[in-house]
Length: 450
Image (cartoon, rainbow, N blue to C red):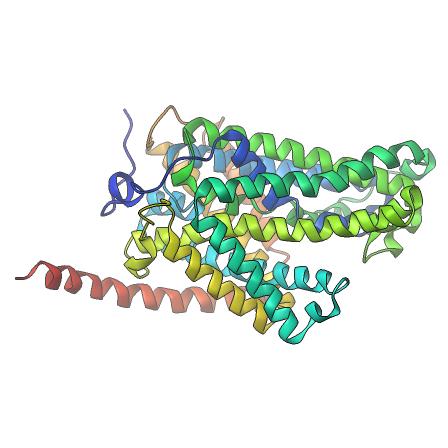
């Protein structure tokens, strides 16, 4: 016997009713790949080489293994809860409104600062071509144009936003695949020989950095209320995207290592650009640098497709203003949430670089992951499903427990200061939740009174 996800004042039956399920397996896979393969892959090979040398692929495989555990949990939860909101919705259905609200706050904390930071980097990369984009009014104009255009595209329809993500995903993969296809013929086999098996501590330190090259799944899963047949689409897209991402990372790392050898760690700023120049000359360097810029744009476009839906979900559930849950009568998109999110993130990107908050965003992401893997087991235990036969994680609680242990291990590397900041944010949010909860009954009474 199965139980449907709770209605929560219109969540399943009415809250998402105005949205259109237009995201299929291909589009969701592209969105996950786009949100995962970011600008980091253009610099991380040097970091991996510095930590492990030619044995760097081990760290990628460790990260892929950890993410496989997490992805199994996400697939299980996503196949059972088809509400817009992604990880927030999974946690909310499993543990109730308050814990769900906290997960929504963590997502908002992670997403806004992460995308603002990437957007400022995007403006900086354009500054190489147009110096005015690097600072001042020119930089502000670039960021306003970026978020304004993406907001307009996504308001026009989820299909428009998904198609853009598909196109950008292909565009960001082309430079990497060209680099691999051209460079593999010039690889020095001696540069790929392991001097010995690296120490576990060295693998761990390198994996902690590389794990963030695999983060981004949560952004792509937010528009769950617009995914076709989520019980099968979500698991297929997750596993396909993880396989493609891991393969691309291993190929890029191997070719770069084979071209630059022990010297790769000295090109920390742009190792792939340096490696491409060894094979394709100046055009190779330009291709890779352009690919990095496109990759940044792709991340921002993917975030603009996904993250506004988190605001929509919080508005739908009565935690944030109800206006955020409005759906455009013609385009069937959460237009108020999209525009609001674009304004907030544009303001953050213009006002600061936010590079100092990158670790805080990562801590928030891992904490959210921990809540979601726990929720996946709870949803499976309660036999909750919202349509179709859900994906069931093998081994009962084994996979969620292993995933939780891995996440806690990663979180143990963060400092007390970062946990303190996160605790303060969640504390303030909890006070806001209590105040809002007290006001909601009075609003219902006043709205129902003659």
